[in-house]
Image 1: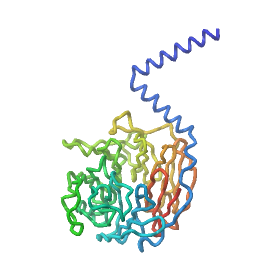
Image 2: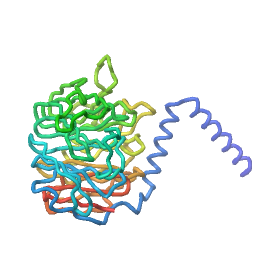
Image 3: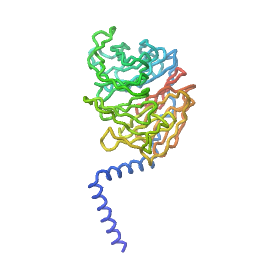
Image 4: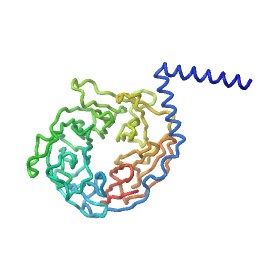
Length: 386
């Protein structure tokens, strides 16, 4: 009887496998359930950054508002409230400082082709994108900075109010910025060297498209399809997906953040982090709830909730600075919390694995390259964790 029962179960499982293959939707659901189960069961990486190995002090006399790790180097690019951008090492030694004017520097993103070449060895013959950073400021301008010399090589008056976020898209031929003026701007990048670094080239960065929204645009994040961005808009329960290659300028895709599917606005998105695999989004909301969305199939325009994953709640404060990032295995996530802390979450269970006390006052932003985590703060310091 046991032998016959075993054979019967084999036939049942074979039938189920054939049925799943014949029904892609059920097959996709089974794959999603398997992914959720793996995230729930995984302990996550044990070697995530949690120890401060360097504290960079004195880099700026003003609050440090943004920071980016320079690939392959023990250096960061920082932007501060005094309008300065600085390339500084983990040893607090500065390679250069550039004052851009026009108020504080709110955001920085390095070109996808950026190399690990030291600032002192950057050749004038090298393609500009190999040592290029994009900077958004309080005056609404988006600027391109040569990270080898600190020279401003392009400037574009993209917005009428704060340029609060920006991101390179795909191979770096497109740059998208967002602003307090309720707009998202898609820029085209010329990709050639500026002729005179003392006179920024206005043709190097051009506005291709401007999209207006009903409220402040909090954040933009590039998706892994190479041409789309996720957009977080204040006072809306919808996440927006914009295709930068859409020449017909069709209607922007909306993703409802309410699990029930209604349009009641009880919270709104403030920050979006894309997982290393590109299949998951971590959405930070103004009420402190962290939502995980999963891409449906290969379609970067279709996302839905992961109801089987744990509930993640973040401690936030008035005028909170939202910033989050994934660990490489997508089983852990880092998020800026109240009290100058960074909380580490297990994304499967939603539990807080560790609370990192890093700064004296508000953490403004952070960056993670898979090995090193850096944070910046209103206490005018940068912390490096490994």
